[in-house]
Length: 246
Image (cartoon, rainbow, N blue to C red; front, side, top):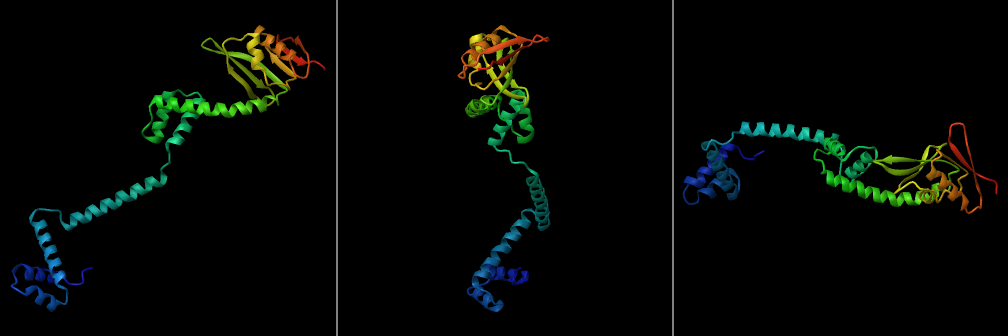
Protein backbone atom coordinates (compact mmCIF):
# COMPACT_ATOMS: atom_id res chain seq x y z
CA UNK A 1 0.00 0.00 0.00
CA UNK A 2 1.31 3.52 -0.89
CA UNK A 3 2.22 5.68 2.12
CA UNK A 4 1.17 8.87 0.31
CA UNK A 5 -2.22 9.30 -1.38
CA UNK A 6 -2.38 9.16 -5.16
CA UNK A 7 -3.26 12.86 -5.29
CA UNK A 8 0.12 13.63 -3.78
CA UNK A 9 1.77 11.74 -6.62
CA UNK A 10 0.10 14.07 -9.11
CA UNK A 11 1.32 17.09 -7.15
CA UNK A 12 4.82 15.64 -7.11
CA UNK A 13 4.66 15.16 -10.87
CA UNK A 14 3.59 18.79 -11.30
CA UNK A 15 6.54 19.97 -9.19
CA UNK A 16 8.93 17.99 -11.41
CA UNK A 17 7.42 18.98 -14.75
CA UNK A 18 6.34 22.61 -14.31
CA UNK A 19 7.88 23.79 -11.05
CA UNK A 20 10.73 26.21 -11.15
CA UNK A 21 14.15 25.98 -9.54
CA UNK A 22 13.86 24.44 -6.03
CA UNK A 23 10.25 23.27 -6.55
CA UNK A 24 11.10 19.59 -5.96
CA UNK A 25 12.86 20.34 -2.66
CA UNK A 26 10.03 22.53 -1.46
CA UNK A 27 7.48 19.88 -2.47
CA UNK A 28 9.38 17.14 -0.62
CA UNK A 29 9.52 19.21 2.58
CA UNK A 30 5.87 20.12 2.29
CA UNK A 31 4.55 16.54 2.14
CA UNK A 32 7.32 14.90 4.17
CA UNK A 33 9.03 12.67 1.65
CA UNK A 34 12.39 12.50 -0.06
CA UNK A 35 13.28 14.25 -3.30
CA UNK A 36 13.78 10.79 -4.90
CA UNK A 37 10.20 9.85 -3.98
CA UNK A 38 8.98 12.98 -5.77
CA UNK A 39 10.83 11.96 -8.93
CA UNK A 40 9.61 8.32 -8.64
CA UNK A 41 5.98 9.46 -8.33
CA UNK A 42 6.37 11.72 -11.35
CA UNK A 43 7.70 8.82 -13.42
CA UNK A 44 4.82 6.54 -12.39
CA UNK A 45 2.23 9.21 -13.15
CA UNK A 46 3.79 9.77 -16.55
CA UNK A 47 3.73 6.04 -17.31
CA UNK A 48 0.07 5.75 -16.25
CA UNK A 49 -0.95 8.66 -18.46
CA UNK A 50 1.05 7.22 -21.37
CA UNK A 51 -0.61 3.81 -21.00
CA UNK A 52 -4.08 5.34 -20.86
CA UNK A 53 -3.46 7.54 -23.89
CA UNK A 54 -1.98 4.67 -25.87
CA UNK A 55 -4.97 2.37 -25.41
CA UNK A 56 -3.12 -0.10 -23.16
CA UNK A 57 -4.74 -2.65 -20.88
CA UNK A 58 -6.78 -1.25 -18.05
CA UNK A 59 -6.46 -2.18 -14.41
CA UNK A 60 -9.57 -4.33 -14.75
CA UNK A 61 -7.96 -6.15 -17.67
CA UNK A 62 -4.87 -6.89 -15.61
CA UNK A 63 -7.01 -8.20 -12.75
CA UNK A 64 -8.87 -10.48 -15.14
CA UNK A 65 -5.56 -11.80 -16.49
CA UNK A 66 -4.36 -12.47 -12.96
CA UNK A 67 -7.56 -14.41 -12.16
CA UNK A 68 -7.19 -16.51 -15.32
CA UNK A 69 -3.55 -17.24 -14.59
CA UNK A 70 -4.40 -18.31 -11.05
CA UNK A 71 -7.00 -20.73 -12.41
CA UNK A 72 -4.45 -22.10 -14.90
CA UNK A 73 -1.87 -22.56 -12.15
CA UNK A 74 -4.41 -24.40 -9.98
CA UNK A 75 -5.30 -26.71 -12.88
CA UNK A 76 -1.63 -27.41 -13.64
CA UNK A 77 -0.97 -28.18 -9.98
CA UNK A 78 -3.91 -30.59 -9.97
CA UNK A 79 -2.59 -32.38 -13.05
CA UNK A 80 0.89 -32.53 -11.56
CA UNK A 81 -0.45 -34.17 -8.41
CA UNK A 82 -2.09 -36.88 -10.55
CA UNK A 83 0.76 -37.26 -13.04
CA UNK A 84 2.81 -40.46 -13.26
CA UNK A 85 6.54 -40.09 -13.56
CA UNK A 86 7.64 -42.10 -16.55
CA UNK A 87 11.34 -41.46 -17.21
CA UNK A 88 13.27 -43.28 -19.90
CA UNK A 89 14.50 -45.98 -17.52
CA UNK A 90 10.87 -46.89 -16.74
CA UNK A 91 10.01 -46.82 -20.42
CA UNK A 92 12.83 -49.30 -21.10
CA UNK A 93 11.51 -51.63 -18.42
CA UNK A 94 7.98 -51.30 -19.83
CA UNK A 95 9.19 -52.14 -23.35
CA UNK A 96 11.13 -55.20 -22.20
CA UNK A 97 8.19 -56.50 -20.15
CA UNK A 98 5.66 -55.91 -22.92
CA UNK A 99 7.86 -57.69 -25.47
CA UNK A 100 8.37 -60.62 -23.10
CA UNK A 101 4.56 -60.88 -22.81
CA UNK A 102 4.32 -61.24 -26.58
CA UNK A 103 3.55 -57.70 -27.73
CA UNK A 104 5.15 -56.45 -30.93
CA UNK A 105 7.32 -53.35 -31.06
CA UNK A 106 4.46 -51.45 -32.74
CA UNK A 107 1.99 -52.44 -30.01
CA UNK A 108 4.50 -51.53 -27.31
CA UNK A 109 5.04 -48.15 -28.97
CA UNK A 110 1.30 -47.43 -29.02
CA UNK A 111 0.96 -48.25 -25.32
CA UNK A 112 3.97 -46.09 -24.45
CA UNK A 113 2.36 -43.21 -26.30
CA UNK A 114 -0.71 -43.48 -24.06
CA UNK A 115 1.36 -43.03 -20.90
CA UNK A 116 4.38 -41.04 -22.04
CA UNK A 117 2.49 -38.91 -24.62
CA UNK A 118 5.56 -38.97 -26.87
CA UNK A 119 6.68 -42.50 -27.63
CA UNK A 120 10.13 -43.62 -28.85
CA UNK A 121 10.69 -45.06 -32.30
CA UNK A 122 10.39 -48.79 -33.02
CA UNK A 123 14.14 -49.01 -33.58
CA UNK A 124 14.82 -47.47 -30.17
CA UNK A 125 12.40 -49.89 -28.52
CA UNK A 126 14.22 -52.75 -30.28
CA UNK A 127 17.55 -51.52 -28.88
CA UNK A 128 16.05 -51.30 -25.39
CA UNK A 129 14.69 -54.84 -25.61
CA UNK A 130 17.99 -56.22 -26.90
CA UNK A 131 19.93 -54.51 -24.10
CA UNK A 132 17.48 -55.94 -21.53
CA UNK A 133 17.81 -59.41 -23.06
CA UNK A 134 21.61 -59.27 -22.87
CA UNK A 135 21.48 -58.12 -19.23
CA UNK A 136 18.93 -60.80 -18.33
CA UNK A 137 20.99 -63.44 -20.10
CA UNK A 138 23.97 -62.75 -17.84
CA UNK A 139 21.77 -63.18 -14.76
CA UNK A 140 19.95 -66.26 -16.08
CA UNK A 141 23.18 -68.03 -16.92
CA UNK A 142 24.09 -68.14 -13.25
CA UNK A 143 20.55 -69.05 -12.20
CA UNK A 144 20.42 -71.87 -14.76
CA UNK A 145 23.56 -73.46 -13.37
CA UNK A 146 22.05 -73.54 -9.89
CA UNK A 147 18.47 -74.44 -10.75
CA UNK A 148 19.31 -77.31 -13.12
CA UNK A 149 21.01 -79.18 -10.28
CA UNK A 150 17.68 -79.11 -8.38
CA UNK A 151 15.64 -80.85 -11.10
CA UNK A 152 14.79 -84.49 -10.33
CA UNK A 153 12.10 -84.98 -12.99
CA UNK A 154 11.97 -83.21 -16.34
CA UNK A 155 9.69 -83.18 -19.37
CA UNK A 156 11.56 -82.41 -22.59
CA UNK A 157 10.42 -81.73 -26.15
CA UNK A 158 10.91 -79.43 -29.13
CA UNK A 159 8.76 -76.56 -30.32
CA UNK A 160 9.22 -74.82 -33.64
CA UNK A 161 9.27 -71.20 -34.76
CA UNK A 162 9.22 -70.84 -38.54
CA UNK A 163 10.66 -74.33 -38.83
CA UNK A 164 13.52 -73.69 -36.39
CA UNK A 165 13.61 -75.93 -33.31
CA UNK A 166 13.66 -74.66 -29.74
CA UNK A 167 14.55 -77.25 -27.10
CA UNK A 168 12.36 -76.90 -24.02
CA UNK A 169 12.13 -78.54 -20.63
CA UNK A 170 9.68 -78.26 -17.73
CA UNK A 171 9.81 -79.52 -14.17
CA UNK A 172 6.29 -81.02 -13.83
CA UNK A 173 5.62 -80.47 -10.13
CA UNK A 174 6.44 -76.75 -10.06
CA UNK A 175 5.76 -76.18 -13.77
CA UNK A 176 9.05 -74.29 -13.84
CA UNK A 177 10.51 -73.77 -17.29
CA UNK A 178 14.03 -75.13 -16.87
CA UNK A 179 15.17 -75.27 -20.50
CA UNK A 180 14.52 -72.97 -23.45
CA UNK A 181 17.24 -73.03 -26.04
CA UNK A 182 17.33 -72.21 -29.73
CA UNK A 183 19.10 -74.94 -31.67
CA UNK A 184 20.37 -75.49 -35.19
CA UNK A 185 18.86 -79.00 -35.16
CA UNK A 186 17.35 -81.54 -32.77
CA UNK A 187 19.90 -84.30 -33.09
CA UNK A 188 21.04 -86.52 -30.24
CA UNK A 189 24.30 -84.58 -29.91
CA UNK A 190 22.42 -81.27 -29.66
CA UNK A 191 20.06 -82.66 -27.03
CA UNK A 192 22.96 -84.14 -25.07
CA UNK A 193 24.61 -80.72 -24.88
CA UNK A 194 21.32 -79.09 -23.89
CA UNK A 195 20.89 -81.55 -21.01
CA UNK A 196 24.29 -80.71 -19.49
CA UNK A 197 23.87 -79.46 -15.95
CA UNK A 198 20.88 -81.66 -15.11
CA UNK A 199 23.16 -83.89 -13.07
CA UNK A 200 20.52 -84.81 -10.48
CA UNK A 201 17.89 -85.76 -13.06
CA UNK A 202 16.27 -89.03 -12.02
CA UNK A 203 13.53 -89.26 -14.60
CA UNK A 204 12.99 -87.67 -18.02
CA UNK A 205 9.66 -87.79 -19.83
CA UNK A 206 9.96 -87.44 -23.61
CA UNK A 207 7.77 -88.14 -26.62
CA UNK A 208 9.97 -90.81 -28.16
CA UNK A 209 11.54 -88.57 -30.78
CA UNK A 210 14.83 -89.90 -32.06
CA UNK A 211 16.80 -86.76 -31.24
CA UNK A 212 15.69 -86.23 -27.67
CA UNK A 213 15.77 -89.98 -27.01
CA UNK A 214 19.33 -90.27 -28.28
CA UNK A 215 20.38 -87.18 -26.32
CA UNK A 216 18.83 -88.61 -23.17
CA UNK A 217 20.70 -91.85 -23.64
CA UNK A 218 24.02 -90.13 -24.28
CA UNK A 219 23.51 -87.78 -21.34
CA UNK A 220 22.64 -90.69 -19.03
CA UNK A 221 25.66 -92.69 -20.14
CA UNK A 222 28.10 -89.95 -19.16
CA UNK A 223 26.56 -89.04 -15.81
CA UNK A 224 29.25 -88.34 -13.20
CA UNK A 225 27.53 -90.74 -10.82
CA UNK A 226 27.98 -93.55 -13.30
CA UNK A 227 24.27 -94.31 -13.40
CA UNK A 228 22.94 -96.07 -16.45
CA UNK A 229 19.66 -95.24 -18.18
CA UNK A 230 16.76 -97.54 -18.69
CA UNK A 231 13.65 -96.72 -20.68
CA UNK A 232 10.20 -98.07 -21.24
CA UNK A 233 7.22 -97.03 -23.34
CA UNK A 234 3.86 -96.65 -21.64
CA UNK A 235 0.39 -97.14 -23.14
CA UNK A 236 0.27 -93.52 -24.32
CA UNK A 237 3.44 -93.88 -26.36
CA UNK A 238 5.40 -91.63 -24.02
CA UNK A 239 8.92 -92.71 -23.28
CA UNK A 240 9.97 -92.29 -19.68
CA UNK A 241 13.69 -92.56 -18.95
CA UNK A 242 14.68 -93.25 -15.37
CA UNK A 243 18.04 -93.51 -13.67
CA UNK A 244 18.90 -97.14 -12.95
CA UNK A 245 20.32 -98.20 -9.62
CA UNK A 246 24.04 -97.56 -9.31
